[in-house]
Every structure is written in structure tokens, then in C-alpha cells.
Image (cartoon, rainbow, N blue to C red; front, side, top):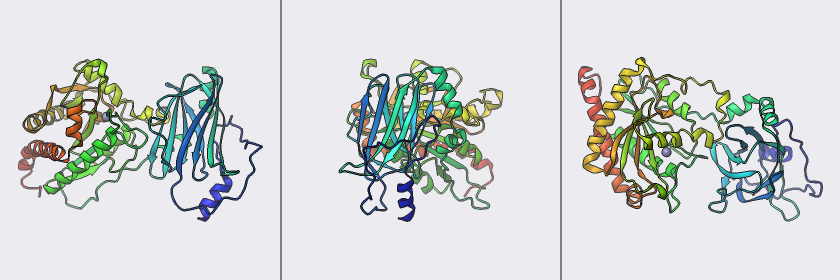
Length: 418
Ligand SMILES: [Zn+2]
């Protein structure tokens, strides 16, 4: 209560040094009613202005600290907040106004939410401030943007506090407790997207991030039940995890297999597609569809407003070279096993085995596959994806494929596996 009360008094913290803190003069600061310990709720959003100046306002149930910064290529403005529950009108954010093309919002880490505005061109954050509830108005977050040129925009970015930005999206993935002498292989289950990055959407509004999380949890439980594996998830709730972080986690814990779970969608104009596909890593996409998909999936960090330029990037730059040959062979072997298992239980895509340059598959030492369970955009596939029965059958197929993959090595290990 006290901490929150102090935060309410302090109100604003700014990262963008060009921003001027200025409360609207006509708004009297008055004492708030009793503050609850609950998470603030964003209840409404407004955009006003034109191509020169645009104001972005969010109504909140409590005043929150706000920090804003800009990112280039594509041009974005990122607003970091403490954890906020977004209860904004549906589809809000899909259409912008003035300098703002579109915006999205969600959890970026435990205790932290983020709003990312895509802007039509280079902009400057003129003001970013929070207002307490007053004169019958709710608490608000106000962001004023003005158009600028690319040179000034880039200059401004270098002046921003890089350290603060880089740490903003750091989420620690929880590893399973290491038990001494536990030689069982570690499998990392990686539900795609999360938090501010919803992934694709079905026509009826289901988010990929929720579908793949539900499936991932089911898969973890079934793998654990075999007793043969240790299992870790890159996320087990609605939190955003950067792509590199997922890979780093698998490598740091010497995972024996990395399984990324996704659900695809294609625009109606591109015809119909259905069924599951299994992807492995390759420098050159196996076909146009694989290339399109990798491009979409690799955008996750951009969507979340992660500043890749300041990240020590030991994964994205790894060359696919000879050192990865063995890993590639294992990845492909598991992908083939999996497609074989899926044949019996799951509808498969016409060309179910494909490859492309997915960032999340780039661990040079961990066999990795990315499973697209089906198409959120295809009615029958969506029925499957939403069915607990289908998910259970498909997860069982995955477990069988994992068993087949590890069986030779477990036998060779002389019973070192329980
Ligand atoms: Zn995805």
C-alpha cells in the first residue's frame, strides 16, 4: 500500500530525454480514494491528432509509472508500465490514427506490461506522463508524439538509456530442479509467443499464444508421466519470452531436445491450407510457404518491442555450418519420426516436412523442431485445436515420437535412464 502510494505521488519516470514532463495545467491534483492492492486495469484508449502531432491516451483504474522509448526499423514507440490488466474494447489497436499505424499491448515479463505503437514514420516522444484521477476523470497515461526526420530519430535513439531498455524484456525461464545423478534427458517444450505477442488469431478471436500454451502444458504433463524425461517449459503462463532467450535457455541447460509449438494461419486470399507441419532449421527455406512462416515467426521480438540492437546476440548470428551437422541430422530424424506418428492421429499438411531459417531453432547443439499444429484460419483445424480430445491424441503422438527418438540412446546408455 505504501509503496504504491509513493509511486502514485512520484507518478512519472521518463527515459526519453527529449520528453518534457508537463502535467496538464487545468487538471487539479487531488487525493485519490483508497488505493487497492489490485493490478491496475486499462479500461479505454483514445487516439487524437494528425500526421504532425498525435496524442495517445489510456484510461486506468490507478495511476502508474510510465517510461517511453523509440525503436527503429520498423519505427516503434514502446511504453513500459508496471503490470496492467488490459480490458480495452476488442480489436482496439488494429487501426491507428495520425502518426500511429496500429498498437498492441500485453505482459512483457512478470510484473511488467508494455504497449507498442507502430508509427507511420520517425517520431519523437514529446511528452509521456501519468495523471491521477481527478475531476471525475479516471487516471490516465498520456503520450504525445510529434513527427520528425529519420536522422533526428536515430540520434534520439542513441541518446536513450540502452541499459534500461535492454533489461526491460528480460524474463527468467524457470528450469526444473536439477537432481544430482538424474541422467534423464531434458526436453524443452516451447509454446510460441505469449504476453504482448499474441501470435496469429482465428476468425473467431482465439489467440495462437493461448492455444499453443494449452497444448504445451498437456505435452509437458504427458512427457513427465512417462518418467523417462525431465521437462522444462520456456513459458507456462501468458508471458512474453524473446526468441533468443528460448534458445539460450535450452543451450544453458544442455537440453536433449527442443520442441517449439505453434499454430499457423494464412490469409483467405492465399487459398486453403490445413493440417500439421513439422519444421527444421535450414539456411534456405524448403518452399515459399516455409519462408513466409519463418518470416512471420521471427517477428516475435519486433512485435514485443525488444531492442535487438543492444542485445549481445550470440544466437541469431550463428552460422549454419558443419559444426551443426549432427544436430541437424538429429533434428531431421525427430521431425521424420514425428510426421510418421502424426499420420495415424492427426491431419497432416500436404507437405508436412519443411525447413526454413527460424531463429528459435538455431541452437547449434540442441536438436530442435518447430511444430505447427494446424491452421487457426481453417475452420476444421480450429475445431481440432480447441478440442481437448484432439490435443490429447496429438500430444500422445508427440510422446511416442520422443520415445522413438531417445530409445536407441537410452538402450546404449546401459540403463542409465530410469
Ligand atoms: Zn507462431
